Length: 239
Ligand SMILES: O=C(O)CCC(=O)C(=O)O
Ligand SMILES: [Mn+2]
Image 1 (cartoon, rainbow, N blue to C red):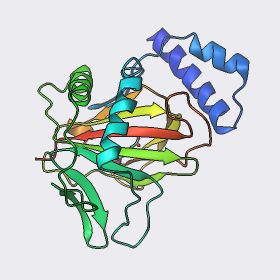
Image 2: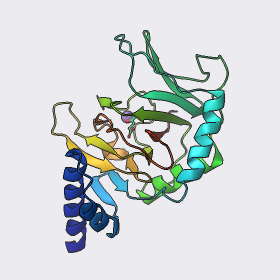
Image 3: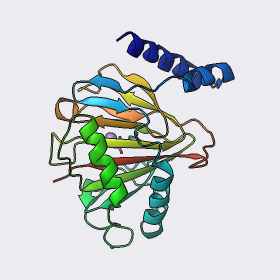
């Protein structure tokens, strides 16, 4: 417990450095030398620190393949707002939004073609991360791919367009770091601000499945894998 709390302290310090725009070298090297412990958020939710770090370059290559067939686009919400995050999908269905509502679609509305198949690497990673968080037999049928550049954000929301209300959401961060917003079951509940870095995976399901979450406006930066962007893969069990 002692070492876990110690690591938490380092995360808090790092969060301050990140949010103050101060990437102080001493702070960063201290942080880099610490093992990045998994971080339980609450029952049914955990951050698996660095779970996808080794595979991140291969994941970026798969994203490039996916976007050749189904390019990133900025969807419009039912309220008429154009989202700052660019999105695409792979898998059996993809999440889409337009003036008529949010839904899962078996085809890409931009082309009328099926979404690219979910790469085996994606599936293996999602199944492994779900198991690491205590969710066995995970079988996601959709992966929403999000691309954030400086200033892009995702407002506090619940993922509730899926029929399966227990299977986890598995959310993989690649590239630039972000502040992940972790709230409660009501929109008005207090919100924690958690840094997610390239390779980190947040898993939430079961009792935590409908927790409000989001992403604070991304800070400008450059990352060796993704340049000016953060890529997020979000796996879902829709049916
Ligand atoms: O980008 C993230 O970390 C979260 C994405 C998300 O919540 C979503 O796609 O529904
Ligand atoms: Mn979400």
